[in-house]
Structures are given as structure tokens and as C-alpha cells.
Length: 293
Ligand SMILES: [Zn+2]
Ligand SMILES: [Zn+2]
Image (cartoon, rainbow, N blue to C red):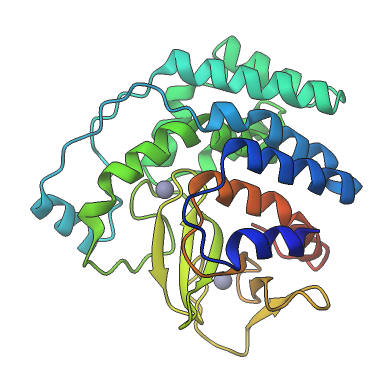
């Protein structure tokens, strides 16, 4: 099913990105056929309409010159820029995501995270500030300090910021054209790669940010987390028969991994989240072998 899903969406050139309805239908099929991943897939399905509706937003204005200098210095475009994220909108999205997860998987995991943001112990401004300052790991650390689930906290942060950050990347992406970006984090917001693509007939490698969906070209044989380029410690994990479509690129130096899809053209932001859900079996396989994201 995941193979069919990936083939339909990424194996052929689509004229338009799949609609929210199409994406929901695909996620329904995926949830039915992959009971082990039913909860995270249905959770994303529930959130799709909200993820596709951006808030009102002022995009920071950067001159092409400043943008070029930042990128050459390895600084994401949003680093240090005045950015007013609508905190009420963020809190609403966070709460809706927690409520949706609680409905689908009533195990009490989301409640404490909803409460932590509601009462201000987990502050949207601090979390967004940490991401933009290049310290996304501070969000995990803060969640752990509060006794909350750190993986769930970072997923909630992604779902809460995604509508805002994808608009920012779409507006700022033209400033990145023609410049080379070397670091392993996102050139727009500094987030970590959620997925990668071997794209097009030439199979060039592109990484995609999990927060803003930015797309940037990267070396084919390279670990974005620790800069390792040694083919002896870089490898792939894949499921039998699936290697032509999706696999996890692993690094034995830092034990990091990035899931890689074969695509013909860049998936739209919502399709990127759906592809992440359709390849959760690779995350599981990677975790079982001691790799982490
Ligand atoms: Zn980004
Ligand atoms: Zn590495």
C-alpha cells in the first residue's frame, strides 16, 4: 500500500499537488492496510485541513544581498530576523492537534502536552525561538525536563508551525536560488531534514525540512547530521522489494538516518507529511537497528 501510495504520488509527474481530499483518502487506505501505524496516520489525516490553512502573516523582508551573505555564512534566512508568529494561532493549533490525537489514541499522552502549553510551562515563543536560533534540541530538552514525551512534543511543534513556516519558505525560496547551501539543516528556518528525495532522472539528492518543507540540494553520499562522507560507514536500510521507492540513508558514525524517496519532482508540503506517514515502517526499522532521527 505504501508502495502504491508513493508510486501514485511521486512516481509520476503530477500537474497539481494532491488535494486535501485526495490526501485524506490515501491516508484512510494507508491506516486500514497498516494497522501498526493507524494512530499516527489517522492523526495526520485529521489535521490535514488545518495544516493546509495558513494564518495571516508578515514575511520578513530580506534584501538579495543580505540573503546571499547569510547563506554563504551557513545562516538560515530566518535566523535573527524579526518574526512575529501569532501565538494565539499557535496555541489553538497545538490544542487541536492534542485533542485530535487524544480522540484517535486515548492513552493520555497528549493531555499533559496540551496542558503544558495552555498554562505556559511550555512556551510557544521559547520553542519557536529555539528552532530559529539553531537549537531545536532545546525543545526536546524542555519537554523532558517537564516530564513530557519529547518525540510527541517535537511532532506537535512541527504540526503547529507547519502552516506558518511553509508560507515563509514559499516567500523566501526565490532568495535561495543560485546559492550553494552546505549545512545539513534547513536554509530557510534551520530545522532538521524530515525526508530526502532522489529526484528526477539524474537522481540528484534533495533534503526537505520538516518545519517549512524547504527543499535543498545535498551531496549524494553524505550524512547531514555529522558531515560524514565515508561510504564505508554510510549505508541504506530498505524493505525487500521497496528499495527503488524508499529507503533510509544511515550513518554509522552518528547513528543518524534520513528517509529517502525516489521522486520525479518535489512533493508539495502536505504530500511531504503524507510521505513521512507512509514510510513510518522505515523509522521503525531504523530504530530497531539503533539509528535515530
Ligand atoms: Zn525549514
Ligand atoms: Zn552521521
